[in-house]
Image 1 (spheres, one colour):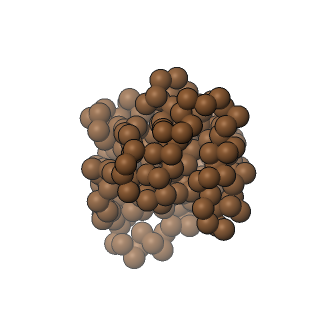
Image 2 (cartoon, rainbow, N blue to C red; image 1 turned 90 degrees about the vertical axis):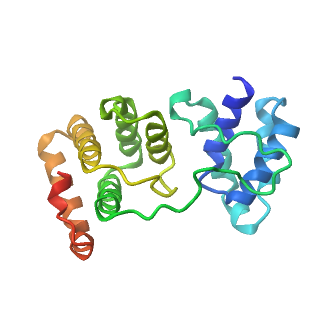
Length: 213
């Protein structure tokens, strides 16, 4: 692994746990003190990253997330945040908050409801299936990277407002993956349950939920 690729792995593993200031400090520390050290030094790195009681309580999960990211294929890593040496907060040219329109907001809610209905291993398999098929959406490079980053680390904000046709294709990929793992009968049931779970929010946003299906 070259330095940018290893930094992407560290960033991917830490992303769910650190805010922008903590992330910049962690990446800077990793690059200057740990990037050339052997893998077993990760435990010491994580210990130094956990500067609050909240982080210390999840230290084991953070270490596990880093190991998983390092062992993951490049296609499952977040994009390179760049060198953060000497910076006080994570720099991100796309960090401005996006206000989602109704269809994108409901897409996020419906996707979450679908994934919450399955176990963690199946959820990961569904996401992997979607990532392998993103090329069918014919997005530009920037859009493709943004949606990929969101699927990999779904606790971050949805990156932008996509066209309805793109959202429909993403829901369809979810459904195809569900069919592969559960068969069409259970997939239909899970989709129906997820749809029911977000009906009230769709009505509040004055959006026809079935436009996504």
